[in-house]
Amino acid sequence: QVQLQESGPRLVKPSGTLSLTCAVSGVSISSNNWWNWVRQSPGKGLEWIGEIHHNGATNYNPSLRGRVTMSMDKSTNHLSLTLSPVNAADTAMYYCARGSALPSSVDDPWGQGILVTVSS
Amino acid sequence: QSVLTQPPSVSAAPGQKVTISCSGTRSNIGNNYVSWYQQLPGTAPKLLIYDNDKRPSGIRDRFSGSKSGTSATLGITGLQTGDEADYYCGTWDSSLSAVVFGGGTKLTVL
Image (cartoon, rainbow over all chains, first blue to last red; front, side):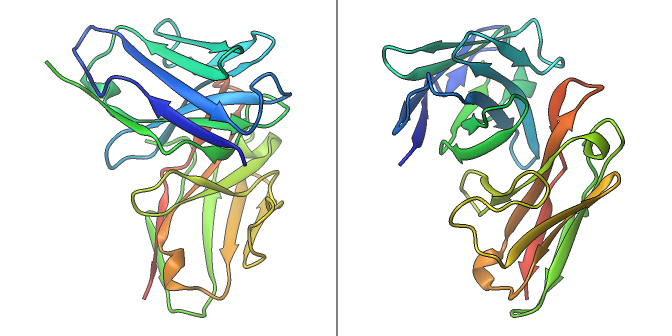
């Protein structure tokens, strides 16, 4: 059974750096899947942040490009998301989710999410 | 403002059928596959439909998807109170070079 679990600081100061980790279990992140990050501002809809493949390829949402970096650690089966600098508009629930074998598709499962607040 | 347009809310009685629409353009729905997600209160989204009309393993056939031109539709039959949730459509947008989602539709089972 594939499971994803996000973790990281829940409070980040404005102009600081948001760093999250997603622990993947039940499947190797080196499998032929893309891995996504999606966020949801409180009471709002879903926003795709980007995706990463085990071959190192990444696709980022142009609206966040320049601020976002995704990476993976195959030895620990973890995904990482970095967003910098952050502002209040980056306050959101952040999810990691498995994609398909082809890019540009958010599939299943999703992690339970982690609420990150940007505030001084 | 979301790239894909969904009605903010729909409602129907238990046992009835409901449809949720998702409208886009040629750069997104018109030329790419559509997925649908269910987000129960306080939980993460869950994939209901992928590639316009396919159900992942474990998803009941009460849920169906279709696409025509630049619009997609999610259908739910035999409504249950447990179906009350927010439903989102999503697809790739070739012009924006990003996965885009609808604003979500809140389903109420009266």
